[in-house]
Length: 178
Image (tube, rainbow, N blue to C red; front, top):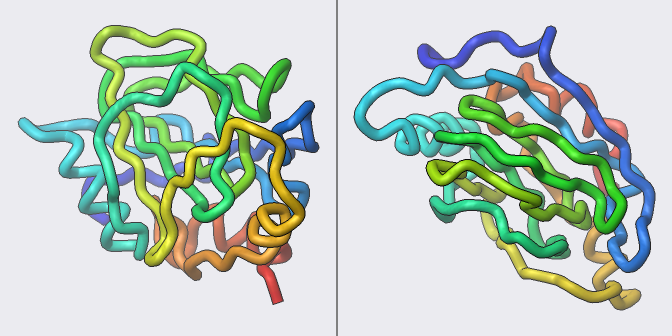
């Protein structure tokens, strides 16, 4: 896409084990793209939405990240930081703190705990999910059925930022449900 930069040198992965009541995802890593998208124009959120949509991740919302620990069992989630910055804790209580800033993209596999520990007043995120998936907000230990859903939830073949050649293709391919 015209408005993205190659991020291979700034792509980071984070594997998270279960933490307290948060299941995380034991087979798929979080993928963090630092400065993945050059934020430009009058409506930079639309740029993130266009890029995510072009790669099969329809955007669902524009907002921040909740200030409480939660995870999703019915959707893998991509978060595009449109403006501002935030300290996000990934993985549940006592998890990993990540500094997210304008232009960053975080790809969270289902089950990944996340919480906003503090953000600038202008912090804005675009959230997107694969077709047919959504953000069911979970704030308690998962049931066996929810754990099974996390383990078998399908995902698109394309990375939400770089399409067929992105981090999802490389880092999630071995974890693809059968």
